[in-house]
Length: 108
Ligand SMILES: [Zn+2]
Image (tube, rainbow, N blue to C red):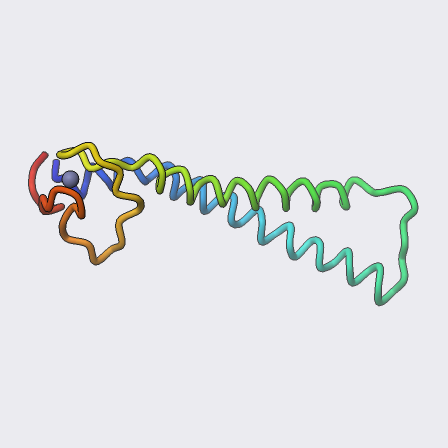
């Protein structure tokens, strides 16, 4: 396995988590838009907060923080397998470790 493959493998669960939380945040955002539309345009004001309004709030908070976490945690924890230094989240065009200069296509 190459160094690049190793880094990709470490990032993979965070990519999936970022995708799921990102979709949740977007869906909640659209849901919140529908709520605001109801309140402002058709003046349908529920005194009791409905399950839907709570689901939108919860979805937004979980989605937003989950997405941020899935972006920040790999940035803080990913390490180069050769020099063990934190390398953040490498951009697609990176060919070398910024700390030790080993190529990402080299074997570990
Ligand atoms: Zn390195």
